Amino acid sequence: MTRIFVGVLSVIAGLLAVFNPLSASVAATTLTGWALVIVGALQGYSAWQSTGMRVRLGTGIGAAAALIMGLLLLFGSFAEGSFLRTLLGVLLLISGVAKLWFSRQLRQDPLFLVIIAAGVVSLLLGAAVLTGVPGFLARSLGVVLGLELMANGVALIVLSMRPTPPARLR
Image (cartoon, rainbow, N blue to C red; front, side, top):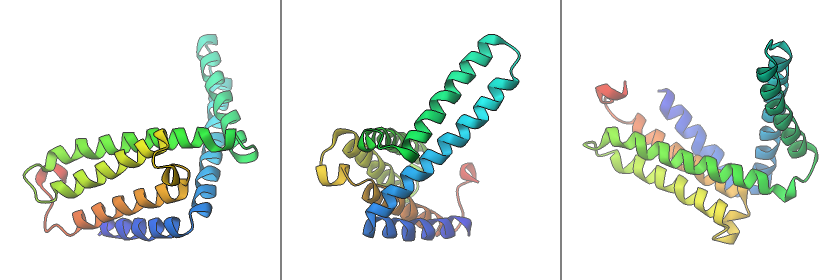
């Protein structure tokens, strides 16, 4: 039941993002910025509490980098979104590879192709964002996020309609 709810929610959010790509891009930038600020602050606290100098220095540098990136995403142009584009492209590629890896468990199942398709969509979107081809898609992070959400949502809906998942997926 949870899969179908999340799947439907994902498809609806994807449609909203595709039809309002500017808002989706701004939301993604804002969420990423705040996440980096929070992670950086927590890492900074962890560095402050560390006893060893090597650990404190390494954690502190990571904290500073996260804080700076987060603040730049929230309050600066940060090279007109090139950092966010690169990060999104890499994450889409990782997501695609993970879906393809997961689909190996479903080889004998008819749903195998649905998971493969969702993985291929993620890989294609990641490649489009990183290479800039096609230009209209690579420049609109909102559309890319919307398409990814819709592909994930459809895959989750189809998976939730299965009578019983295979034992290795329970």
